[in-house]
Length: 483
Image (cartoon, rainbow, N blue to C red; front, side):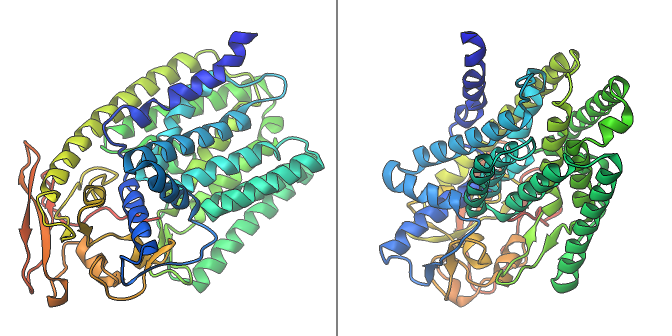
């Protein structure tokens, strides 16, 4: 009994290994988050003219946590503690959501859970969303089964805290929780009607948003509908693992339907919730411009595909998990984490070169990046300059303050960061023409692709800030992503 009780704490410690196995945590937006935490401290000291901290109720919890940890422990410890805490909360939510009252936690699903923990949402670095999702899963674990007034009140409190991190997972968990509570009280016909009503609500909300706000959408693929695309990180080779996970889920579904009457299996509350999540992925815009934002809320399909993946695991956990899943999942997870270790080690070498070049600049110099990774699903180098500049120089193309999606905002022209969203977009696309007011301004350029050597060159007014691909592609249009 004692050994069984230690399994979850031991698993949590194991899940923290990728947070500490490299000199720096490679998570695309994390360097931007820690850099802006440093700028926030400068604002508090009156040393950042043109920047301000705005009151904000959502998309802020992880950033506040980073600021306080940075204030007390310094940048490296702040990142490790904040990310480790987010990973623990995320997995606590999954452990609770997947655990059944009689069967406990289905350990055969643990390798897949581990991959989702370090999947696309984590690697892209939208850590407010990631943290909110973990808190939302804890709340949802209280709502999917029969609940009491005390459990419901605790769930509402957790959803409020999750909202401070990000609104989307909060609304998702609240909606799924309500769906499960109502579905439990209905018969087969009632559940079909209730699910049909849920589809109409989702389509109605999406229609309203697209009718009133500028948006863009494209048809999703099967990978994103069921969340298998969450393990498609970094290089294209990860698509093979995603395809293997898709096959695993199809086989597991076939075995579930063979053991349980198909109507009973497909009309369970979690099965219907999974279907509703797939409808959300299929219908939601990929990006939408919300009021008050200066940049669209992007990559919505990629974010909420995580919802589908987790709900599929929760649905499968309601029945006995097939024995073959454990070894197959372990093989996939081993291949996944071996690839992640290899790629993040290379990215640390890149950041070593960027940091060395940035530290040759005069203190408080303005500098922009001049390189991108084009052939990877993520562009992990997009914000590495932010972390390299922390405490030393100004990353002039820092994307957060001009979006108005975060607490830290560029409210006027300033010597620290671009205040124009158009200028920042031109910079990211390699089209920006340097202005007199930008000077003095430096650009980091790639000297040697094999040795990953970089240097800083001064820019002149009228010069275009061109981009050099690190992976050899002639295309200079970067991958888009934002919080």
